[in-house]
Amino acid sequence: MDTFSQVEKKRFWILVIIVSISGFSQGMLLPLISAIFERDGVSSALNGLNATGLYIGTLLVSPFMEAPLRRFGYKPIIIGGGILVFSSLLLFPLWKSVVFWYILRLLIGIGDHALHFSTQTWITSFSSQQRLGRNIAIYGLSFGAGFAVGPLFVPLVNVFEGLPFIVSGILCLLAWSLVFKLKNEFPDVMKGKAATDRFFTRFKATIAVAWLAFLGPFGYGFLESSLNAMYPVYALRSGIDLTYVSLILVSFSVGGMVSQIPLGILSDKIGRRPVFLLALGGGALSFFVASTVETSIIAVMSMFFVAGLFVGSIFSLGISYMSEMTPKHLLPTGNLLCGIFFSVGSLTGPFLGGLFLEFEASFSFLLLISIFLGTLFVVSLIKKGQSNSPVA
Image (cartoon, rainbow, N blue to C red; front, side, top):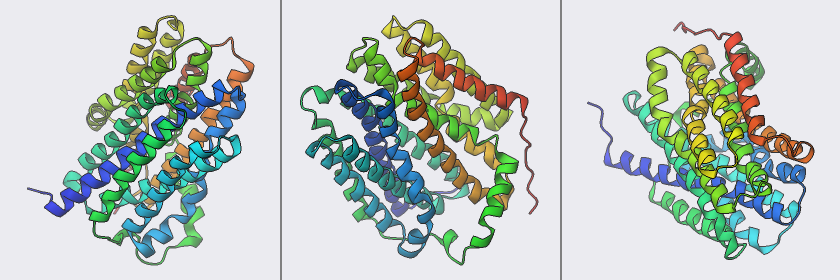
């Protein structure tokens, strides 16, 4: 029977702790800054545009991550990413400026991507086939748990505006310091000369066979960023207290955490596509119902939890779906594209959400989310993806 060595077990849990604190900082930052800007009278369009800094940072650094990881190993990349994240968090209270805060969010996006790319690759490199799925599920849940707890710290802004940033920065610093207990390693899978001249060929080939699966990461990115960055603005304008806004966002994250492993197991048994369609359809219906019961905080919170049960897993379902449709030799490119589509969705969500609040204030924001998920459901329903049976 496959077993973890003590060294591997220690390494795994340290990496899980690091990524959970990263999720916490992201989950807190989006609604926190949106609420502060809303209080200060910053336009919702500019508010949404500012939230894109996190994801633009991710996209900017993506093409340059592989080479330093191959050259320096996992540990230095995690150290560098961690320094960027906690130092940026601690700089927020020093100067309140839309431009300055945008630059800090850009740096946090770069640091977070370095953390995620290196920790995820490290975990997959030492996890056996028997434990890979379980380990990645725990890894994903740890980020989700951190992301769910993050919004609960937003009300600290009522004590002192810089307090949430300071608390988050200190927690990140403490988690990051654990990496010094680990011995550096290098990714075997990334050694050797890369065939850069064939990258765009692989890029196009992967999109051709698996574009339908990328709707999962794209949809989740759109959903996560628009809910956490722009829904607080909409809710505050609707008269909902900031503490309740935090609890509503947490209920969505908790729903996603509860269903992630069950939906993954279900997709193994009945297929990726039916579960993917169930998730999108259930999410669209849940947000539609939520848009009709907005006068009751308890009802909205309940529907956010139900929506989380359905669509909280569409990122991981999309990755599984992609793996099923993509030939073996294109899987690395497929995983890279999942990250890119997630970032594009994350960029699109706050910007379009901000424009929507600017011009359609009488129209429910939750109905917009429902229409978005409904559109993805219809596209997935009428365009059936092909399962791939890779030839060795």
